[in-house]
Length: 391
Image (cartoon, rainbow, N blue to C red):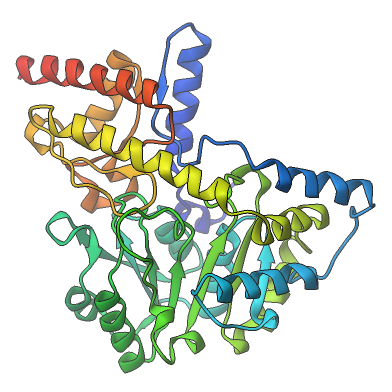
């Protein structure tokens, strides 16, 4: 069977590939510490699961409006205003099965063949993959360690051409853990306004930040009419398997995006949207407790990595990933990823899984227990000592 040419432009997520190899090794009897997959290791809070169960028993098992049930759209708008992030109206909110569809719908609706999409590199691999698939030209914007893995507005503007249609931001950032500052956002917003660009602001990790308040281009006057906010329930409420996301769109995009929903998934499951409402309106303590655990783990991981000869690691400002510099080990990162899995029983990801500017770095998810993290870090120290001794 001959595939369409466009399939050659569609990438994948290396995290799932490494997870599959690690699971196969576990099935064969190996003990593996999982630092590859990007999801909270906490259970969904009980009040959220209870709301879904109640909705199921109440018969919420049928089709609902494509952009989401009114109560869920209202809950999102109210939550964004209550949390100080954005004042918007429910009719600009679209609920989707996971947040990835927001990326697909935005690029399908906006990008013609040959339009350019500027995205962060290292960055979530779907940005480049989806842009290429829809026929746009992906343009990587490097994130540099010396700039705290934040997008440099001057470098961004140098990449903008008359074909640039969309700029993708992600803060706090996967895989590097960097977080944009207020000044960064103001400078990026000025570029978007000056060049009449649309911005896709991926803020799925907004609640998982450690030192500074969350900053967004949406804080800048005028940006709400040219910015798509991408968010969801997966990271904030430990609901990855629920597949729940939302986008907040400029008014002109709501109807086209809704049409794309109708043509692809029809709607997001009814009962899960009632769980989504419970998450947004219920107690916030489970989120605070989760972030406190991540903060503790961040210290454990960063301190241990900086004690390993040949490795250095900046402290991430948000999300739950460490992105250590491993150039001092003298080994290509893909080879290092494979050797750590095979020899040390530690599943992590090469920085090149997130773009070419990830060479020289690893991504470690610290969504695991402190005990497992300490065991993994000890194994990394031992394995890297053997690697450098053999060079």
